[in-house]
Amino acid sequence: MEGPGSSGANQINLENMKNNSKAYETYMNRKKVFQNAVCRFPEVINEAMNKNDLSIDDIRLIIPHQANLRIIQSVAKSMNISMDKKNIQ
Image 1 (cartoon, one colour):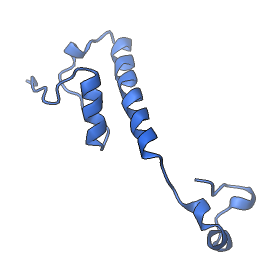
Image 2 (spheres, rainbow, N blue to C red):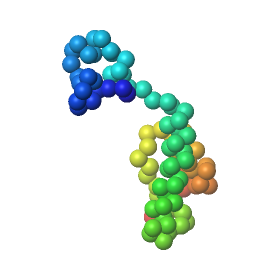
Image 3 (tube, rainbow, N blue to C red):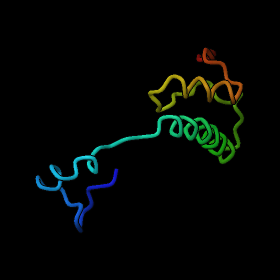
């Protein structure tokens, strides 16, 4: 998003919004967001396990804070984690 800022010419006001409405539209590159998530998510999981001296076999349940099922499935596949790991007692 190009604007708005807290100072300068991109402050939110009616005139700027009428004259430069594209600057106030949010957008994302879905492919890059997906690729970044699939890359970074396992890194964070592994970092947390390493810092706590755990392996994936020590984990009984992973509840990802991620609304995109494709990302979750891709991460599970890349980490060789079953999507139906159900050994919770």
